[in-house]
Image (tube, rainbow over all chains, first blue to last red; front, side, top):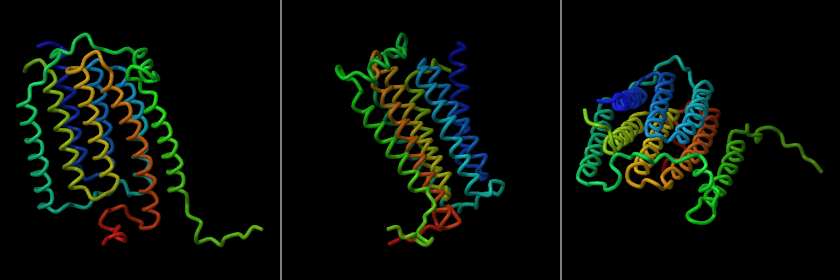
Length: 178
Length: 104
């Protein structure tokens, strides 16, 4: 058993245990912190697979951006020290049952299917230069068009956020400008 | 313990997805439901990267799908939090049971 295997199992345990804690704890601030650890565990798995670029993106966007956004919105909308209301036992039981059945179904299908391909995954770590060339390329399956679409989508989301979160001025008297 | 490979990563990804589904079913607070959705998107990203590494080596398409999913997830989280803050202003609560003007 090599060091790489041990690191893989430790990262997997970190990810899954903190995900379970994140969906089951009744303190909302702790849920956010456990979400942070889950995201770090997934970034560690990307590092373990030698996809360093995507691991860096994961840390910058998720750990640095989305978690901070969630924590700020908790501070804006909740009394963070109070417990969330208790859920009915029946709802929890049936949710757990549904999740477990779905998981069992997926794992049965995965176990039946044999994926062909490079089973060790060795010798396949893309460099940042490859990623940049293909992302902005326009031939041979380049991703220039989706890149532009995503940039327009991000702009639209930015404008939409500002419009939604603006305090509405409907109740104030409208100044009549001529 | 055996050497980890594609099936181990698929197991982690599926387990993470259904943990998030459980959270989405049980939670009644909009911010925690948003956290569950982020967990689901992360499990999908992990799946794409694992398939790209083990089944389709030499190509980068799974990696690009992951990058675009991350970008869309960031936009989605920002819009969702703007909606949540606006809902809190009008209802003083972000529990989904309290927001029922659009029911029926």
